[in-house]
Length: 245
Length: 245
DNA sequence: GTGTAAAAGTCAATTTTTTAACAGCTGAAA
DNA sequence: TTTCAGCTGTTAAAAAATTGACTTTTACAC
Image 1 (tube, rainbow over the protein chains, first blue to last red):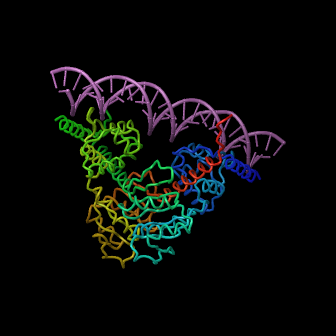
Image 2: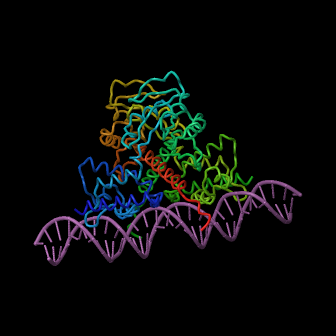
Image 3: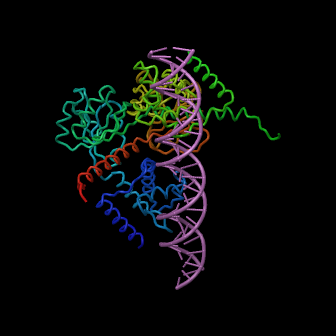
């Protein structure tokens, strides 16, 4: 059927990208949206939906169909005119773009509540990231297992990294210790830091990728939006209905 | 001195806004950046820096000075030509815009690791949000105190909200329970939901403000960036230095 | 006082992002 | 087999965001 042909074609295209190393440029705006597509497609799959049009997806995701078509077209023909998008195929492609299949290994630094919470959320496994262990400065915690993940003492970090391929480190340790540990991690050859501690780690470094999670920022935006809505309502309530001039 | 005059003037301006309800429109791009300004200004304050120019701030924040001036100018003259910005004053203004002084009250639904982690992070108090309590479906947890916050059984939610002004609810309870609880919260008159559970709550509702925190999305973007950097390096390594034609 | 360097404010140009329109496929029904 | 409705890919237009250049104001040194 035509769909299989499409798949083959697209695979060739992707192979081509790899060969020439000319992965198409993806604008930041699109990159930021990709995880959301990923989530929705996964949801569609669990619902057993195998095919979807941009307009239906747009209704579900509350964005314009035009944007979806534009976004997905960055990579080249995932869809098929007159048919729509094959959910499974699209999901696979986006997964690959996002590196779900890369099989990265992660460690969590800091076995406090936050670290523990992150282990429990099925976040990592869902995204193909394997957690190798947790580390904590408190040696008393060493040996404890949380959700199947063992806690190691922090001083064993270098040794551990030498024996295991560690790609990502999740930073949930006290703020003041972050910079020093980050430095150690870079030396160990860790490729990315996922930083929860609000410390603004130096961008612009060439040897490490940093993703800062600023939960507080999110709270402030919620705050702001609530204020705004309250004002709107207040204003609307005050407003005199001006039917006549 | 001229600065005091500026402050007075700006205060009048803000009063004016309030009176006429014509708070200036702030573009989404700027709103997203405001919490970051907030953080940097707070940091400057703790360092005892009382005055800063757009160019110096731009160097610290790694953005263009032009953007800073443009952003801050949305609200009208926070700075002073030839002088720069008064850190304390600017911080106060941005705090107010973000609703730090609004004195919102919050509750946390779900006393699992995540809920506990959030209580411990000094996030709320730093932003002027007061946590009144935590709720958990497990009645066995009722009465326990975490960081000075008491856990209540979930069935007391309505009663509690009737007796206390609750503005914000933080959702850290199991995914499947989120929609039902959200509905109850809206009925209780809660104004904003801070949702951690990846469930995509219906936007576009008029009766509630929703801020979704998608930690998984952040992880995927980290993943993606690592992949990209690896590819770049790989490519750079392969590249033949073409000095001669 | 006065001149000057420094800085915000402002406007215009540029770039990026989003939206709209439409041409051309495709699958399915008649 | 042919037609047609539905859908993507594509292009162009519009809107939004960012950057750069210029104007005006101010503090400060002399």
